[in-house]
Image (cartoon, rainbow, N blue to C red; front, side, top):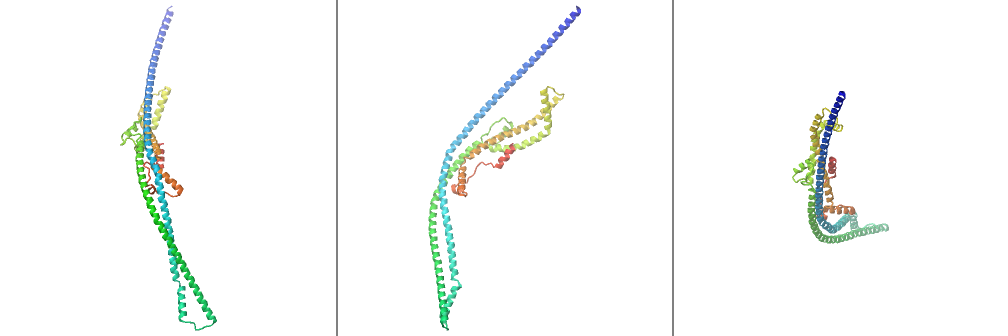
Length: 410
């Protein structure tokens, strides 16, 4: 009986101990579960709060974007009537210039005709002069004087016949010579009359040119005023796009820091300059990262493996401490690259807007007209002479610059 009592007491004691241990474990598990549930709830609440904040931020950004786009579109809409007026009057100015150009071409043709006729007259004068100097003419005078002063002493049928042949030939030659001179002089007089007629026509053309030039100069002045008005408003619209992100706050600390120190708060030109300077900062950060890259990757691998497997090595605390020391260097490089890419997105977005806006610049109208004239008439058009305007683009990026910056951004 004693042994039975001892066995019962021992079993009961062990059972109570096991029940107590089990209860402690359950209580600990319940506490851990409650703590885990609390952490999950806190984390869920934190995630919900962050999602809500981010959604609200996105909604604000979307609202600001819509407002800015509406403002930009309104500015472009206000600009379009002036551009339409400029484009319409461009053809009026083009018409008056074509009249001036046509008369100028006629004057040029007239000048060439006069020059060609005068050149021909000079040649005829030289030919007449040379004919008058021919030795044959001087020889005929000598022959006549000699035969007149010294009659032939011998006379017979042969001599008389020969003399008559010589006289007849001399007379024919003299008649031909005189006829040639008369023909040349007549031709020269006719050419001089043509020159006189052309000179009178040229005077009339000059008078007509003065009239149409007076009208064209007035058109050029009007078109120049319209062009300046368009350019001023176009530049205002452009400035609005260039200043699209001025004093804008972002989630990137480096971006906020860089923009805060800018004179105008972040225009397109300033953003481009900041991007150019960021390459040097990224290079310095890379130089700091390269020596620790191997240690950082090794420590990160050990910590990640320990957390996923639950098997923590004896040097885990040291490895984690080293990882925490190296992380700021890695994070700094990551933040610099992310900030630079973020600004590159801004820059490319603004350039896209401006590229579309360039099509509305008044110079594009003039360049298009000149291109059409070049194709149709096979000659270049001087925009200053035709419109009184020197075409240009205020904002221009060469293809090479675009390519270099795009390559660097990637």
